[in-house]
Amino acid sequence: MSELPPPTIEEFYRQCADRKLMAVRCVRCKHIMVPPRAICPKCRSSRVEWVQLGTQGKLVTYTIVHVSPPQFKHMTPYAVGIVEMEEGVKLPSIIRTSRLESLKIGMELEVDFSPKSQETSWPHWPRYFFKETE
Ligand SMILES: [Zn+2]
Image 1: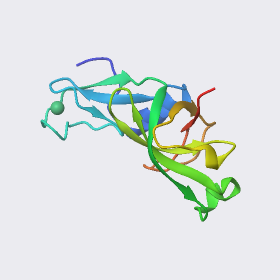
Image 2 (image 1 turned 30 degrees about the vertical axis):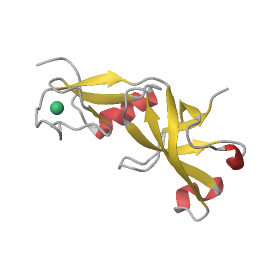
Image 3 (image 1 turned 120 degrees about the vertical axis):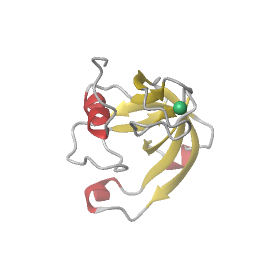
Image 4 (image 1 turned 60 degrees about the vertical axis):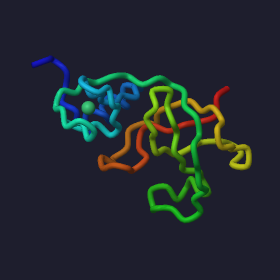
């Protein structure tokens, strides 16, 4: 057994608190999983390892949210989207921008992290988000 923490969503958020975007990779077929899973959905292997993702991704699709859950009301309208990382994994995320109209499919985004939130379930858009690169 390795010293690495188990592939759990709690550990994923713990890493976010350290400003690291982590994924779990299947040792056998290299499939990358976010949120982390203990068993690879592609090859059923249970040999998985933590890997740190890069900081940049591309906007695949997005939508503007005008009616939000109560905890995000102060942010409306805001964008949520899917960001594809260089590693090929796609992440749901809030996309922060000062100008929603400047968002474009395919644009480069970079990850950033919010201060602690109470949310622990997936997907609740906590702790990490993407923003325009500077
Ligand atoms: Zn696999």
